[in-house]
Length: 483
Image (cartoon, rainbow, N blue to C red; front, side, top):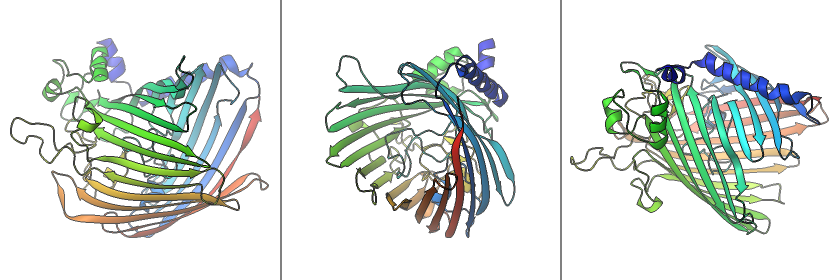
């Protein structure tokens, strides 16, 4: 019982205490003897002004929650960090802390946006804290976001142990590479459900080695579990329950009846594949992602909701800076294993209602933003104040391009979406929306290493309302000190 209490009732202060202690442990033994380590600082100021009810879609939905949804806002971000040294082989460590002041017409929020400590021993990584992560095989800068994880929600406090980067398997001459990790996290927003826990594990395999063609397959498994739920009380969160969550098994006698019939907690599984080809100065990548909320895991070609997924093609150029990359993605989430969960009393498993859950009412969201693709609409847009997701059946065509023209770095995104609502609450008419972003940044290293940025964004259509907005930013980075 004591173990269940310490795992299942841990609060935000306890999480912060764990992370601070981890940071102290990392710094004390190695701070004196480390050589050529660099502590960097980051100061970033930005302002947003727009005409609609919300700031435009692409101003706020690729910012890890840093940009407010309100039409007018301003941010000040202050950070210090140390990254891994490129030459280190056996052991290295790093940390980061970003303090954010975010203000809009109605309120001001102040919090640590990122705070983490990390260490690497040989090929193994250990990270404790909240950090911005790129999870999935999608393009890192032009994508509309991964299906299961995107850049939409703010970082969540986690403890991660594993191999975070592709690493050659011994005795394969580099032809086989793997990465994978085990993650335990905390939903600290507590907007409705309280003290919910996160389980995440993943494994990725890549083949190709020195060949010009590489293929990879990945499997991610996430689950929400534990916590104290309004009207349902405290959910099981002991060691036995963690093992049940790990293997996706049914709950014990202390679990809800639905969790005894089905799996304990709220589970989502994502399969992904990617093909990379290096042709002359170009790198061409094609990738696919799918999610499933029905068990057990099926072969890709036998997945019930096979029409759903994210398909992307990215072309990167190494020696033509004016166009460094172009991208096209197609996202579909309209199938969801069919419209009926119980079609005939014999076949169950349709109407998946992605990112929603009957037990965990806020679903796969964090601080009212979907953790996965932002086109499954975040609850912050709900005019009726509901905490769950109202629009999760979408079709999206997304385009991106970026490059560098005489030191001016640009990026442009355009997305066309059809929004159908949900099977249980469909929209009377399809809501079409167009979202546009044009971003320009210029660094001035001779002027105390300052970078200026300007972004224009707009939404057209009934989904988010017509809106035109501008964002201006000034960022200064540099070395705080070496030791």
